[in-house]
Amino acid sequence: MVLGFLTLLLLDNRRLPAALVVVFIGLLVGLILGTHEGLDKLELGINIPRLLPSGIPPWADFATSLFVLAIPQLPMTIGNSVIATGDLAKEYFRESSKKVTYPAICMSLAAANIMSFFFGGMPMCHGAGGFASRFRFGARTAGSNIISGLLFLLLALLLGSHALSVVYLIPVAALGVLLVFAGSQLALTILDLKERKDLFVPLMMVGITLASNLAVGFIAGIALAYALKSEKLTI
Image (cartoon, rainbow, N blue to C red; front, side, top):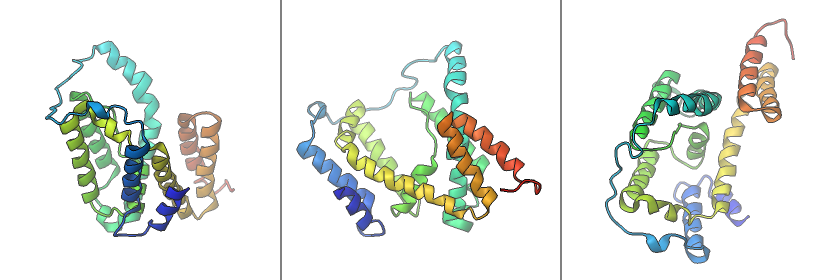
């Protein structure tokens, strides 16, 4: 509750960004009251990532990953990482977002994942939620990405696999507060929909997704959106 009120109080403060204050307080609380698990093993050094640390996977693993991981993830990736991110860029930055096209986002996403593969990294995406939260908490330039990227690089290079011990110091409650505000900011984009037909589509997608899964909701939403373009159908 205290962190939530503090975040709300500093939400539009440019000198004290709410997200940084909440994370900093979370780290202090973790240092004072946390379990300190893994902190005793921290050692500063230079940790260079290995190339293909797990070797080259057999073709059978590629086939399994395609049907078990890649294809099921497509609706989320296309909807959240590509379409929503591109639309938010146009909404937030107007004329300055001309280069943020759907094909450009796909190429950026593909390049990042290909590079991540060679170093044994996890699959990643841009994510409209992260975009919306950064914008809401005050980020307006690429500097925020550069700063956070350098911070993660330093943690990885100096602490290696033990870097997570530092991250785990931040209480889940602090991250939850930031997540609530980030999700709220993203949800408010629905206010841009003025027509009844346009508003009907996402509401139906939410209902279908909760009743089944995201893939069904995604496909049904596309079909419904095209169907409602007809003047014969009214809502």
